[in-house]
Amino acid sequence: MSDSVEPVLPEPVRQRITALSAAALPGMPAEEIPFPLRKVARFAPNRRARLGAQALAAQLAADPLFRQRIGTRIVAEAGDLGSAVAGGMAPAAADPVEVAALAYLARPDGWRELITAAGETVRAEADSAAVANLVHEAEQRAARAEHDRAVARVEADKLRDELARVREELGQLREEARTSARALRETQASLKRATDLVATEKGRASKAAAEHDAEVRRMRTRLAEAEALAASGKQSAKDARAADDARVWLLLETLGQAAAGLRRELAIGPVDKLPADFVADSAADRPGALERSRPRAQDTDDPGRLDQLLALPRAHLIVDGYNVTKRGFAEMSLEQQRKRLITGLGGIAAQTGDEVTVVFDGAERVHGLPPAPRGVRVLFSHKGDTADELIRQLVRAEPAGRPLVVISSDREVADGVRRHGAYPMGADSLLRRLSRG
Image (cartoon, rainbow, N blue to C red; front, side, top):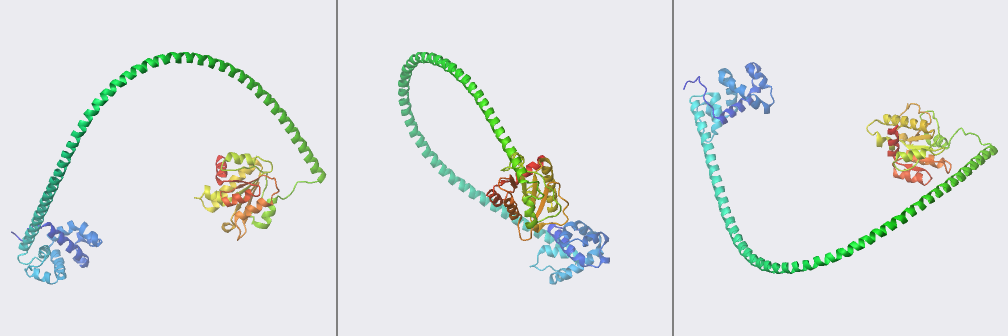
């Protein structure tokens, strides 16, 4: 065969040549690396042999000078085995694939024979492995066949036992069938007697139904009379309730006039400060000037009940600020949470005319808060105190009987203010009220 014709390399030999060349390529001087392989030389080690295999094989086959340079490096790195292969010898204990790869790169005398021998060895090993695999599969099939025969014998024994049992049951069923036939004849005779009895009872039932229909008609007449009496009673009750409402209205009007007279006699004029202002002066930080209004409130998470409570005269709405904002606007920053809540409370204050106070923990206070809307008081607890305690102080400062509505989902806050006569409601009631606009 001509030395200019490249041999057909066994696949394991081709892969080994590619791996050796890819590993040696970065160590060569840049000027000795052919232009098509310079990009491959910059690949990571684990990608060089995989992505550059085709380019490396083409360059090794077409460029004898490059093959000689890189082969010299690889043979030198192979040590004694490389020296032996370069001398045209193949140690008996050496891997034939490794020997063939080094022989292809070094190209000593007889290098084609070494590659051919490696291919034959690889094929022989593959054939041996295939034969061993076929033997193993045949042994497995034989074992499965033996197992199937054993299972079949067991199943045959079971079927014989089952057949004997079925025959025995068949005899019992025949006996039961004869017994059932006798019972059926007796049942048919009983059925005939029952049919005659039913015909007799039908006549009696028809008579009873006629009597029942007559009784129903009488009861309907009495029901109509009772409904007429009930309608008359409802009108009487309505008239009595109207009279009671008139008496209650007259009593409330009298109380209102008496209260107005008492206010004139005691000379009590409008006040400049509300109870919550005294608590704010001593127990809270104010971010800016405050406005006040008039109240309304109630209980649970129902915004409808909140509207009912806010409709009470002189109601005071007290809001646990961060308890509401972190439940409804947790995705916002604290500054945005405060701004959104205070703006919404300004709308409630404008609609209801109620006094509104919102309390935040002072530890997270931010300076420069814009002025609160008219009718909304914004408070921050002092350092070391909590908003919960400030809310309880606000509730205790109010006079007994004034409607106080405290918005907080904190159970401890709700229980505390309830003991002082306030109406605790969950944060969701206010959030739903604000979303409604």
